[in-house]
Amino acid sequence: MYYPYFITYMLSGLVLSILVLIWALRNRQFRDQQRARYLPLVGEAEARPVEISRTYRIQAYILIVLAGLGVLAMAATLVFSLLRMG
Image (cartoon, rainbow, N blue to C red):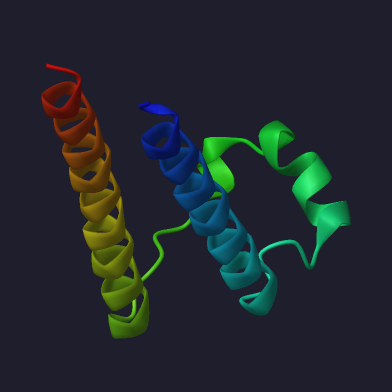
């Protein structure tokens, strides 16, 4: 009945999370685990301002667009399944 819509919703979430994991691995987000272990212990006085490059801004905009598309897909799936039930 309405199970295919929720299965599609779950599969799209799984595919999206796998794509984000692949992106993180390619950009070496997990490369320095020894440093990451002590990051919560570092005081804010040692932090210096970081200059954001154009590439990181573009990546941030792309991630915002992808998140928006995900919300729209979720809303469309819910609306479509509610309309099909009635």
